[in-house]
Amino acid sequence: MNPRGLRARLWRLPVVTRLVLAVAVTMSLVLTGAAGLVYWRVKTALDQQLNDDLATYQDNLDHAVRAEAPLPPGPSGSLQQVLDGQGRVLRSSDALRHRLLLTTAELDAVARGATVRRDVGFLLPITSDTLRLQAKRVAADRQTRIVVTAVRRGHRDEALRELLAQLAFASALTLVAASYVGYRTARAALRPVERYRSGAAALADGAPNTRLDVPADRDDEITRLGHTLNHMLDRLEAAAERERRFVADASHELRTPLTLMRAELDVALHRPRSAGELIETLRSVDTEVQRLIVLSNALLDLEELGSTGHITRSPVPLAYLVETAVAPHVRTAERTGRVLSVQASDTVVDADARWLVPAIGNMLDNALRHGTGTVRLTATAHEGRLRLCVTDEGPGFATEFLPRAFDRFTRAEASRTSEGSGLGLAFVHAVAAAHGGTAHAENTGHGSAVTLDLPC
View 1 (spheres, rainbow, N blue to C red):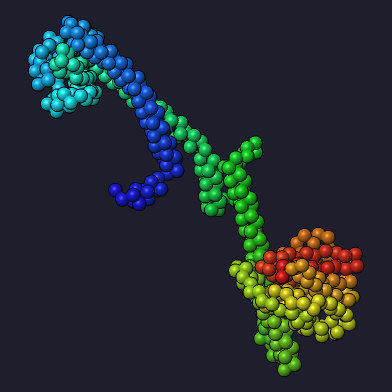
View 2 (view 1 turned 180 degrees about the horizontal axis):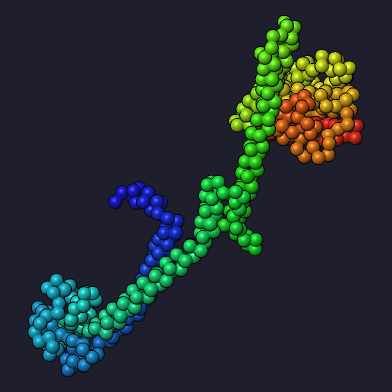
């Protein structure tokens, strides 16, 4: 099977299944290694004992052959043969008679002085008459003799087979237990995740006020995930509430000028009117149309700035930036008998003039519309921060209004019949956020102050 295809199929499995498979594979490798180590140590010990018995018996036979004495008995079930230099059997155990234990190649090797040791038969599958033999050349009365010694491996092989069976059984049992524990542990660890998923699904299906049940007495990764999801749900609920409030406020703001226009037109159409009356009606309708245009443009600007959050910074002289923002409001200040004071540092800042100029304009418009006395605009740049502050000498903001001064469609007056759409300071806050800065409104004791603090 293609490794990539197998990997893809594994990644499509449930997380619990993948965790159990990982535990099973890891435990299989560990158990195989441990079983192999135990088997090797036991096999080494048994082989060493068998080799020691074989070597001892070989030495006794060698001494007997050199002395031309009767062959001594060996361990239980042991065999022996004595051959001449041509491989003819001189003496042999009764169980062997004249059957040779060595091959022709082995006889030649021993005749040249090599020592041959090998096993006869297999551990698995089970075979009868399993032996371990050893052959050496011995000089007896100036003649070459080949002494072959063999001991049976039955007890050694039986012990190893029993050990393999026990290791296989213990490994299988341990693997099953480890897989079961891994499965239960994974299910228990992922149960909160599934609960969180169900809660999020319920919220997606429209369930109100959904919160995840997160234990308060824990501080692990899953618990922190639950707190994060609850925080996200709080933010989503707040965003949905703001959206509902925005739709309601926008509907109210748009309904008012449209209703006035419709009323003016209905009155004009129900009875004949003079040219002067028609002109007055058209002027009233034009005022409401202008109000709709201003409101629509403000909403579109906020939507563009809030949906993308994209600004294009470029170097611009701070004095020019302030002058461009102040120019449209000079005549308004003169017409109302107000003083408009401007102080701007002679420096260059890195900002998006397209958005910053109308933001400054909204701050000035808010001070001229709702404040009294002198309106002061101070623009300074210091250590990479641009600070724009507009103050007036009016009564200041209402205490309950300050926390929501930058919300959309919020006004200090309870009535919605006053001038303004309630979007000016909201736009200022959006521009500040897009630049990575902050907007702040406060009462100074001599009026109000709105401050824009941006990195430049």
